[in-house]
Length: 293
Ligand SMILES: CC(C)=CCC/C(C)=C/CC/C(C)=C/COP(=O)(O)OP(=O)(O)O
Image (cartoon, rainbow, N blue to C red):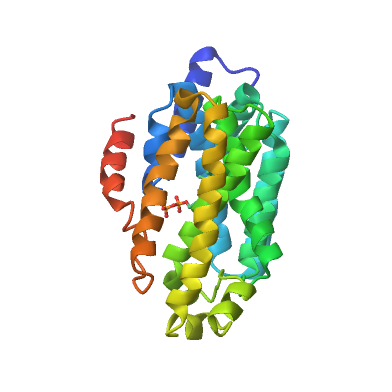
């Protein structure tokens, strides 16, 4: 960045921020509303983290320009690992990397959490089917726990061990709820995140397509639903050790997803369409983001 005038730097910054904002807005994520209430510097940081998550998630899902070619996806994830290291060294190459570098610098975001997230994406790219309970826990720690830890830093809510417990439990609750909601869509992609002990307990086969059409699916979803419920309860125990104001964006992510779990608990035979439970927030959120909210 040396050699640039301050006007050039400001213009680069605006362009980087616009790239990140458009990625978050296009994702239509149910978590965007929680991000939008933050003060601008913290909001820019969490959006950069989220844009990075979206990009690497699309690579792992085969939805990026790399398509589903395993070697191309692996190379793309490796390139993002390099960009994370560069961002931590203050020499990013991409717009998202530049916004991440600013967030890392301001909010002391741990590099290890970004690398864990990338490891989780590699697990996803390799296609997860009926994992062991330990493997599912490790996967969730990587793909969601990392986002929870990074989010708490971006929110200015980090208070050590209690914050780690809160972030990891909430991330587990959200991810399990997401798995329960998206079971049919995941099966179409050849994935089945319901763990082997749950499948066995309900008498389900471990083939994704056979499992989603099986009459015992509601029983399996109910078993995993209890694990999601327990994770939210563990997260709730840590709320009083935090400033409510600092935790508010996280609580705004927790509320709609907990209510979605509640609706699924009412009738496990219904698999809600993707994002139906939180969908009402999305249009409003898109409008907030479009206004620069
Ligand atoms: C402390 C704290 C904030 C912890 C939570 C960490 C967190 C946000 C983890 C992500 C888990 C998850 C279900 C992502 C799906 O995102 P998505 O955008 O695809 O969700 P959607 O499909 O419902 O929009």
